[in-house]
Image 1 (cartoon, helix red, strand yellow):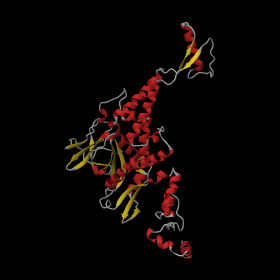
Image 2: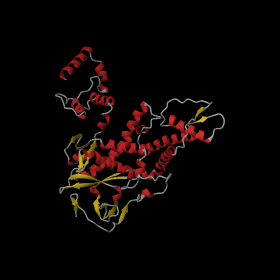
Image 3: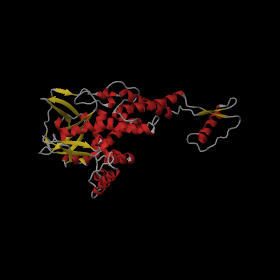
Image 4: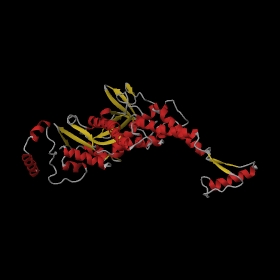
Amino acid sequence: MKILGFDFTINKRSASTTYDPTRNIFNMQGIVGRTPVTEKTALSLSAYWAGVKLISETIANLPVDVIRKEGQKRIPVNHPSEYLLNAESNYKTISFDFIQILVTSAINHGNGLAIIERDRNATPTALINVRKDLCEAKEYDGEIWWKVKTGNSDTDGDYIMVNDRDMINLRAFGTHPVNGLSAISYHKQNLGLSLAAQDYGQDFYNKGTRIDGYLKLNGAMPPDRKAGLAKAWSTNYGANGSSGTAILDDGAEYVRLGLSPEDAQFIETRKFQKNEIATILGVPAHMINELENATFSNIEHQQIEFITYCIGTWIGKLEQEYRRKLLKGSEKADHVFKHNLNSLLRTDVKSQSEYFRTMTDIGVLSINDVRSLMDVNPVDGGDARYVQLNRIPIEQIAEFYTKDPKEVQKIIQQHNENN
């Protein structure tokens, strides 16, 4: 049976060994509140939504280059995979969405999976996301195969067997070589506490149990007059009241209530859970809008850590998986995939200009190299690389400063004329 450009075998019997230690993980016990912890409810938490969105969209926004190594040279090549990873992954999905779905699935379910469609020459022609719950990894005859359901519903019995070399598998953190650990499943208690706090706040305000203050009057008041006063006060000075200033008579006094200990603890719990979610996802707290302990200096440092330790680990996995699955055997030795992190500096003009200045001052980049990174056209004579004249080898310092000043001036003038 040929599907997606290559042969599959429909098989009703199970393979020998099942690779799924986290099977039915979303049915684990340990619900903290009334709301069960699922992908849908976890994403209803603003902090978790923001963290997953930040990681997946940051990676999806990075250009991917295919590079051929020739000694110390790195030469960009026009490879079919480059179009799939930077423009259109398949007939209905742009590359940005493909990678965003892949990374989101890896975080939430432990694995981000995609079938590689190939032509008769084994060249990749499309990358198609597959839901993790429709896939099951098995070992058969010394190889890993993926049992993928093909029906329109979860109850349909038909499936195809896809060899691991034809399946992109972005594996999350874990100890198993094939299946990663789901952040939602293994942090069910933490996320459940956040959902419970969210439910508590919703119930508290929906049921109208919060009292901002009360009217204090001298003496007893008949029930009908008390009801009329309460209605009039709510109409004029309630949440949707039409009057701005209250005028009290007969010795009436409005007593405003401060923040109760329960309310204060509820707010602190919400803040704490934001930090917990940031820790789970490996993102700085200020990036999911928790700014209580943020300062300008530590935010800059945390942004560097985010790129290095959070985004960097996902990028490293993707680059190795692309090299392993999207390259032919003859290409694997000298071809690599590289994400261009320069796009992360585009929003920070100061950092970008300092980086370019340093790289050109030490001769690493030419003017045209910088212009290429900024997506602008090269200029004539911009390929030469320069270093500052006062940067000389340490061994030559003594010789340089013993020269006659006129001779030094002559060397500088000659250098300027040549350049």
